[in-house]
Image (cartoon, rainbow, N blue to C red; front, side):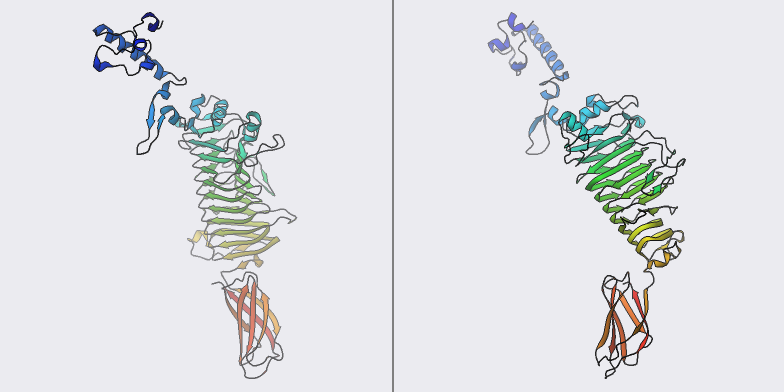
Length: 522
């Protein structure tokens, strides 16, 4: 019973102070039940006991206005505003806040959904020995918007390291699906701009390591039953249309059918990740553009990286190796402006495979490979303007079906410490390679004009694939007469202007012979 009703002379009712001046009650609004106090030892003991009870119980409570709401917080430094500790703590959300448990047993689907709906970054605390947080549900953000009416513009999940904060997806289909146009036939009009930010997490599928299944990517099929790479899962960890500033960093992704599949999207980064034991590690497709794949270990998958209708990709400083169930990199159709720079391969078969549509309708073009180590190349078909420069090559095979303008320059043998030029080009298209390590050669019969005046030239253009502005040109002609000069200049891509100049002092011409043009790269 409130002492105020029993003791009309209480502190709050009468506004009196306790009997001892130095023990004044500063929290009158919080202790309305303190008994009337007099200048006596007994009265002071009653006051102290009542205060301790009120403070202990209120601070331990989690109801509104209690607990951390009662404790102030101010950041160090001038100009800091005063807030409650509760407000400060709610800046981030832990999956533990909603009953999540990383014990390898509990299904955390409901906890993760509740955490995401706060629209705050969600933290997965590390567990001892990386015991996983199990999740069986599919997080399709179009479906989530349809069901809740809520948009989550930034999906941010982070942990304490890929080996300690592990999320194991035990369901079927796709774990995380979202991005700018996540709407589909089942959820029309549900798309909205959506950034993905993952950092310091391990994402693990239900697949068995080293139990590869056959997966077809365009015209290329992986090997079933490989005991060293891939898995037997058909799950997808992430399918996303990346909004600018999206990133997947410092994550492990393993034992899925597909690790990350793009659905359009641009200006994203996948970096410092360990991607292994998936059937396809990264599937970069569906008009994705301006993506950066940097500093990752991509190993022991069926296909390390698949490229299909993609453009303006920068794939650099990765270790892409041991994807024994298929290939390190497979390119299918209609991709352009893709650069592989300073990556490590193991010079095994099928480090890079270009295998396009057999009808040649969607040829890939303008791929650049520069300064890669251990690269083996297999261009089956459908390739135009592929450039291989300063790589250490294990092998190189090229076909001739819808293949043109394949340039090789200053490549060396991988097993000779990069000191011996690579010359072992194989396949039906090898003779058509534009080997710019040696000068480009053009030779044809030519008859000069019969009347070229003194100081004038017989000038014409010849087409030499691979010639570029700035290249040094040498021109000779077997029938050139004394007093004549032969010169050349590259005036545009693949085009050399030849000048046969008359300095004899009189009109002259009419000679015939063989014209030879050499193009030296500068």
